[in-house]
Amino acid sequence: MTLTSLPRTVLHRLAALVVVSLAALNLAYTQPLDSVARARKAKEFFISGTTLQIQGNRHAEAVIDFQQSLRYDSSAVTLTAMARSYRELKKLELALETVNLALARDVSSRDAWELLAEIEILRGRYDEGLAAYERILEFKPTKRQLYTLARLYEPRNAQRAIEIYERIVATSPDITMYMRLSELYQRTKNPTERLRVLKLAAKLAPKDPQIAAEQCELFVEQAQFEDLRSMLKIWDGSNVDQEIATDVWLVALSRILDDSLLVGLYPAEVASVIDLAQLNLSTSWPVMVVAGTVSMVMQDSSRASACFQTAVANPQVIAEGYLEIGRIYAINDRPASAIEYLSIGRIKFPTDIRFPIIISTLHSEQGNDRQAIIELESATILDSTAVDVWVQLGMLYDRSKRIQESDQAYEKALALDPANALANNNYAYSLSLRRIELDRATAMARAAVKAENTNAAFLDTYAWILYQREDFEGAKEFITLAIKYGGNATHYEHYGMILKALGERNAAIRAFEKSLEIDPSRTWVRDELESLTK
Image 1 (cartoon, rainbow, N blue to C red):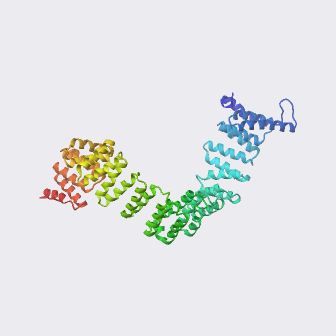
Image 2: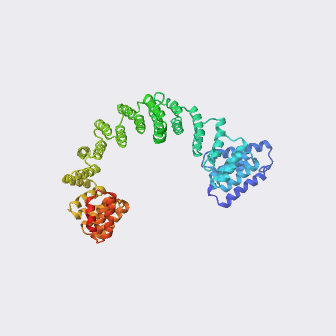
Image 3: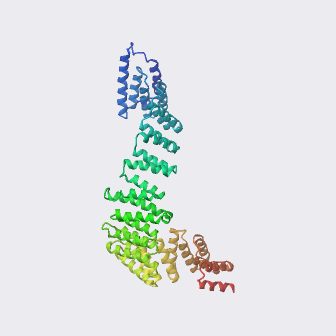
């Protein structure tokens, strides 16, 4: 039978045996033993108990051997070892009682104070555990014990944790401790001290990318461009793995990119970092793309162009490189440049459907629906199952008055995904404008609203179809929701028409007035308003 299966009364008797053993310290089993013999017996049982303890699953047996050892020597070491086994057996009260006996024998036992701290924390008494661990500071704690104490301080007392870590590194420089300090100085908003410990860490590990990345962030944050450039020169791809160098450079450039004020205040310094990237890591296309993006933010088109050209000249550049350059030019209102790079990427990656789709979007935004349609049609050749492409084609065909082709595109989209909300809505609206297949249009519009019940456009479509079917009350319910979640000129125009049909003249006038307020160019709405105010 193991200790964990013994009845509670037996456990209590075992605990009591500690006290009995101490009282019988100078007694032998049947006859007195000299001090040497007692020490030998105590050591034998202690070694046996420790051996069992080390095995990990024999703590109950270890306790018994420690009890026997205590008959001959009531040392704090033995009591602490026995308390540790009680802790492993989850007998926390017995562990607490025993470790306190150990401390009564030797108040300077670091191991006993450490174990007491662990037991108190396991009992949910964090403050008591921390207080116990603090006592270790009085007795020349080991580096590990100091580290544990600092970790205990971290959640509640960052400053005290900093003091302990600083105490450790003062005599034993250690990267782990420096990185803990970096995090704590970040928490306490002390960038100067954080940078100091990162520099110390970098001396121990000059090629550590995490340390370099954190330094990059701080150098940029404090506009220390000279230090930034000095450090980045190390990460040129020749002395370290290029992928790792790329990661460090991307942190620096991304941090610059995130701070538009910094870019505005220090354009020359930022430009010098971009030029250094061109000089030291031009072989990394991601770095060149981000460097070009920073140049665009600086409105430095020539630098941006140079970086982007360097990026795409790299034989290792992948589709994402061209796509990102296209995106950057697009958001900076340079659609022609965006299309130029995307078209080159399309030639290089002819099976990537993203290129014709994005090019189509750019053409569409410029009002060039004809070319946008051509691009999407080529996308369907690459992948005839791309539902979104068919939906976009349906919209563009419809806008170009190619109604039959629009219907066919929507039919293909719905054949692939009958629940597609946008296809259902757009096709339903197109049918309703032609006043055909209103039963089907109603079902499709209802499906779209069910899928996205706060989409103002979908709610408006459903309301308008209900209006055409002379369900004016239902139409009013859904157009009210469309206005709640949207409220554009079309929504108020439809609202006015529905209210007019319901005979709510004054409310209809207000709805038409609101529509014209939003979009004065709606002459037909003005005609409706005038017909009601005559």
